[in-house]
Image (cartoon, rainbow, N blue to C red):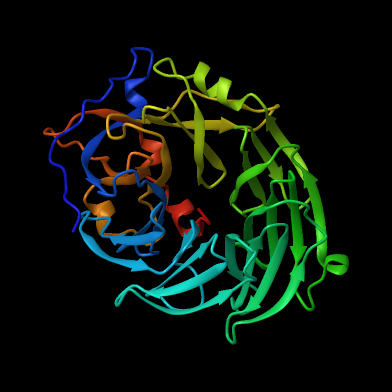
Length: 388
């Protein structure tokens, strides 16, 4: 059982030029040390109803917690290599978590018993970096493995296709489009974003829909926009670009994104980007410092693109690099939201930190824009769960 820390951390107050009318107060509720010596947190993945969150650790283990209370629920142990991606989404049911690893396997875990219930294996020389379920019945499993994209039929666990000519380096991301179950986006260290139509027999010659060249090794991509027609893309050299994937058009190319974010944040210098967060057509890039503070920076991707002053700062919880951010928002809401929990973060210091968005008087203060806490009913009805 992980122990919950009761000591509150000191939090930086916003500079005077920040507009107090546009912010909502919040603070650090607690942090949970994972107690694994030099171990640290890779990813935090939420169950759709926010009743559980899965946390992958550098010990090749997955731990499950309650987002509402921070209570430890159980652990899934079986991978022998780095866990690269976690997700509750898939055709196996609401109590199944999927994870892929550098050990060449994708495993499905029953989160009630914490036992492995099914899975697939690539060749012994493969590493699986990302996966996504899609297709007309949601039973088509796509995985990024080195320079290949492998497909399985999840119903019988048989491999049905292999795309090996579209990328020349590790495929770091594969995601089926939220509004088009047969369209697959892949991204690679070779700097290419490829779109495939997976309807029918899948092969490199007939299924490649479009190719976009980002120009740098790609770390993460994600869909956003009211009709999910846009892609954001973060590279390993901390550049940010925005694309309309349906017509292959580049809408913004921020090669100096880290400098732009640092210039708009007078408190700190941004050392890296963690992820992106979206609400409808609005996009925030989440930047962090090596000492553990992170900020939510609005991205204006029109007119060449710019990064504005942060609308949220989470400081005082971590003492190292933050690797994952879980905003507590969903279409249906959840108990964590009703308790004013803005989200959770995990990092290389081995901590999980819980952040409050309420106005409690007995917690240390940071600050947050109301736009990141409350979504309009119109957006809530249309938004689906982000691949991140």
